[in-house]
Length: 221
Image 1 (cartoon, one colour):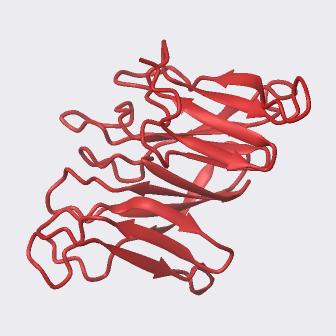
Image 2 (tube, one colour):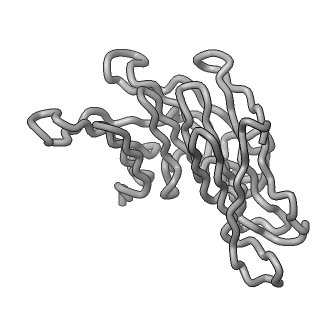
Image 3 (cartoon, rainbow, N blue to C red):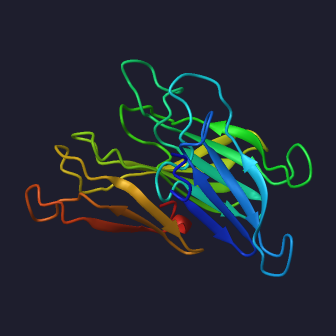
């Protein structure tokens, strides 16, 4: 039960596919076009996240938990509990990989970025969006957590292994007594960031009609 294909990231001639059930600590597989023949999409590397802590792994457990940009890969592990303080579990964690870290095409892990505000079952890392090699977004929808809207965090690199949270996005109209799953999906263009809140109740009571929020990073969100 490797669950190969749970999450897929694709850019140009690279494809990264998660297998959150792979032993011993989940994995992602890198394939490269023209490797081994024209249009062959040959296997390049099996990536495994660092194995410290309990309740670890499940890299790429959700469909949007991988993000790829150039030589830079972000992998969310939303069911990881190593950054949690009991009785908090499933607060999530994010792994950062670089293509040539540890050798050519090695895709070595260069950083582990914990949630800034560990919250029970917030699933930090269930969705990621990579802007470039110095900037990425992480969602934590927490769709099973009552009175929790969800969050999206923006991180900027201060160096190759340290990341600073530069913004936290939350819905301004959250009533404070529901789960909205804000951050269950996130994507971007150079001009805008779009965040899905699939359980949002706007103009209704518990109908889970959903909503999408648009932010302008040029205006500091």
